[in-house]
Length: 227
Length: 356
Image 1 (cartoon, chains in turn purple, orange):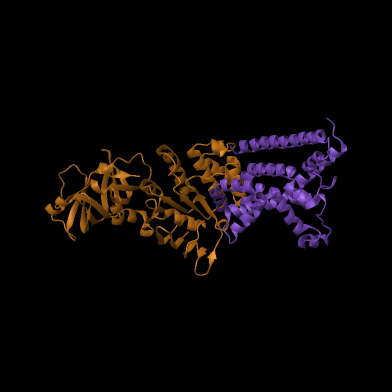
Image 2: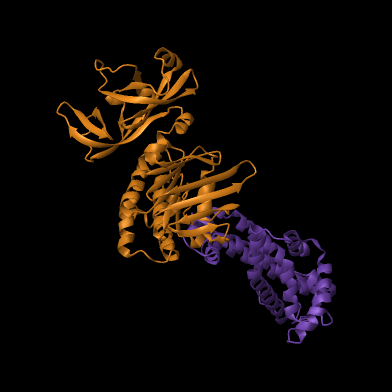
């Protein structure tokens, strides 16, 4: 099966959007997951709610909120536009929407794995003279690596499939914001587009299953190292 | 090396309020579980911030609520040996040890590293992962790891409690070696009197968050307050000097001014030994006796008589060898008309004296 130009465009754009959004949100997600798992502070429940909001809101609502905030007229969008960072109708906007939608999944998975790490091990490392930052890098991080990986794959899959917030925020511009789900949607709007849509569906399934298998394999390797 | 720990801390269920001072060697924190031992150790290590207090090691202040000093855990130079070893599961034994040496400031030389491996007999375990080690092996590696971080002192929180009796016997000698060869001051938490007797120079005894007795081990163990908490009260714990080994298989020792005869100690090469006597193995007589099979008859003055459970009493004597406690029945107290200030004679069967 060879891909048409349009299919290639949708696939590569989807991969670009999903990789960019999930890789860039990885660090903030680990940080916030660590705060939620280990620290007590004022406003913790508020932070928790805000992070999970995209999970419970209708995607269209999230997309519309993004449009209000990050659109050309929005306060943040207008501010960032001065530095040449534009989200509206660009692939960057699609990446932002995907990042926001996938973030709760990423944070949840990482938070769970941090909570599974025995704080006594971190305390033991501290008694050996290790500073808190190094304790995190040398003890916590290696132990949560499989969980981070699993969370990342979940977020990646979510970002690949994100549709509602994306189409609301940055529309459906071929080559700019038309990811695979948007392309499938467009094909289904055209009479006789079912075959093209099916091809895109198969591509989508292939990518997702491959990601899942790779993550399983890596998680097993990581787990074996710990045993 | 000196250690000063003054800590006040309020918990939901009880409050801790102790003031302990010791001079080097092995200091045992002794008491039943829930007496506040682990809390105290965690306060020393910096894992718990007490409400109030002063913690100084060798003159260095680790914590002082008055001046607001509170060093972070990683700045305190403690070598903490945990009950549950806490080896890093994602690192081999070798990397666990290297980790400690690296983050402890890389002070130990290659030779010291090797020496420690020999001392703890863990050289053959280096490539193994912690999950593949036995409980005893794991604890030996944990001891090594604590020592490699260049600690100013060691904290051991019930390091043998998770092990069965045989493993305990396996690990104890390693602590003795640490004490004797590395010269590191050790704070050793335990609820086992046997471990304390074997290792410690001084003891602080905790009961419900209070330090009820502290001092050199031979003083504290003979202490009556300790006796009251034990089902088998200690009669005495004495340091003895070996005088001679007699031909008939009896060893003669002195404790202070007092001479004692023991079953042969010839196999022991040391010339000073610890003697432990159970209070219930001490026989009292109102007049001196020399026509029994007991080889030792010690003259003492009764200082106090304490009632005990089960119709018994603990008679505390002051003898030339030091304090000696005897458990006898209330009937015997009445029959012999024992009262404070009276001179009395204590008979010790030589075989009832245990040397450690």
